[in-house]
Length: 360
Image (spheres, one colour):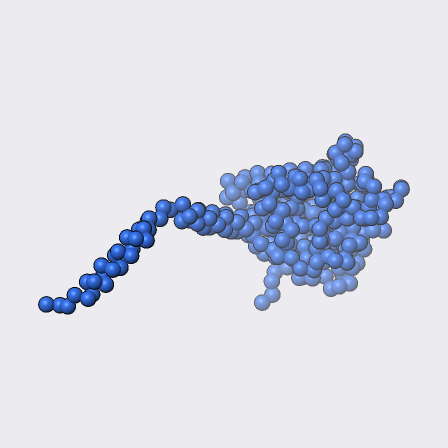
């Protein structure tokens, strides 16, 4: 049975996760709208998708920080592709730096792209979806929306803000009984070009912390999220453990990350002087789907419903608490005192004597 082709619009679609998501939906026969800053990179993605058999691919070169320009771009894409069914917010930037070393203008730029870009994108989607009472918005989140790490305070702060914004929006849509749905997918580290082009004020070149997944893994998960209805999804064990761990032992994670996360986000290669970065302008030559850390990265990750994961954690924790409590209660229960040896021996002799008496 053939599925109806949908119109899917993706921000941050010229590289990394956004590029992989565009390829996944195009492969399924959907009409795809690409939004990013770099026209040359967008044209390359369009050619790539059409060559692989995509039916309709259009693009708009626009900075998501410019709300008016983004709204106009969304209107133009709808006129060429049809009314949007799915809007995916993915555009992001980061700066690898301590809070003490990052410039306020750099911090503002990361916040404008990674947080306000999601706000503007969501508003653009609602302008079309809300009146029609149809549509799905997907926010590309991160485990770092729950647990900030050193060297990425601007990015972590933006992802925290995005989660709060999305919760507010979701409640508003429920209040007005709107069929428009909003889901967040929280991600682990992903092998994208961001580590090759992000601005950095650290001694060595940036790298993903832990074992990253490939962008195609995320794209497949997002495709499944588009078919689902849950409010939040978690991708991979790294995400699950980070979110649940921060709920239970945040102070331990403070100390653990203080010891591990600064060196864990740097390679052994010194950061080259004059390295170009994408904070203020695109780095066209580095636009691709995967980054430089495919060796050791994962091609698989488990996708779970965040609410189910929380419920399972509570049930398991309650069960362990009850089992531990029962064990402690058994140990503390007073035992009946055993009779002295002499009394036990006397009782045995009495019983033997009774057995020896013949019946009348």
